[in-house]
Length: 351
Ligand code: KG4
Image 1 (cartoon, rainbow, N blue to C red):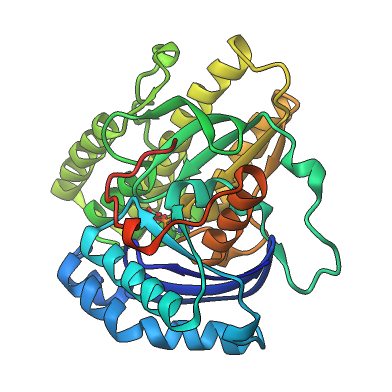
Image 2 (tube, protein in one colour):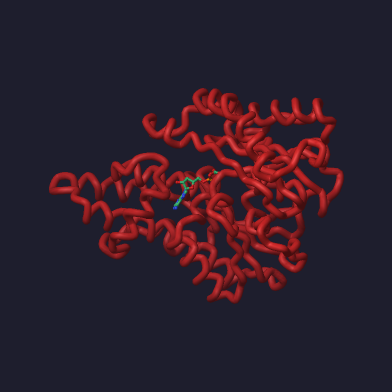
């Protein structure tokens, strides 16, 4: 099953060709630098640039995969969650191609796509998807700019939310921390670079909801305020590069410890006996320190951690959308939806 996948949920215009779980091409045109000067995403700007680039990313994805519309079996498109006017661009394009080439459409949930992104495999591998990795139940952790979710997938399409954020998502908290430190936008990756040169124990920031892990909630508002206070205090003296690196490292360390503690509490007290795998997806999982933290946690609980094979699969991309559409059709069937019924769902939740 060969799929043309499209994602325009936020500030990346993305198209990919996937064959079952194999990524034949994964083209991303990032708008990040265009939004940087505004310190965040401007929806109308995102929409305009999606419109300008959508045809280019699709034709490039097809060319890179050395395929053509006559070999494509279906179109997968992200319908939510995301920015309404940005989602619309991808959906409109999917419908246009569907009519022109008589191809069915599979609508995809962007968070579900992040969740199963570790199952994507490289086209350079001669292997097929390993069915063993698809044995349910599995745990899932999505850490992106818009979501922080720890779930138990009992089967494909059936998720129990074990913990979610009550305010900012982890990526959003890192972005805001980076902005406070004057490191620019988007901040997660640049914060990581500064943190690498700093001491994570230089400043003692409060680990959110410490001692209240059993509430199974993530929260970053208190940590952000603590960083803001520290920065204001330091500014009265001097905010040199060493201090910025130490603050970045301490903030990042504390943010990751919070995730560690909540999941550690769950796995120590209420684990699902049959779940032995954790799938991790989303932009923050690109962070080396984060991956180390989660690997340590999984080792402690004898759970196998699965991350996407390539950096391009962490932040927003369309290959994960194609893989998710394939899995949906394989596990549930009936995933094709009549064009007229497909619409954007900006606040789409996991089923
Ligand atoms: O998955 P993604 O593109 O967004 C959503 O689907 O919402 O993730 C974007 C988020 C941003 O908050 C960005 O700062 C963060 O992922 N991010 C990182 C890194 N690279 C991207 N956070 C920490 N370390 C990184 N290396």
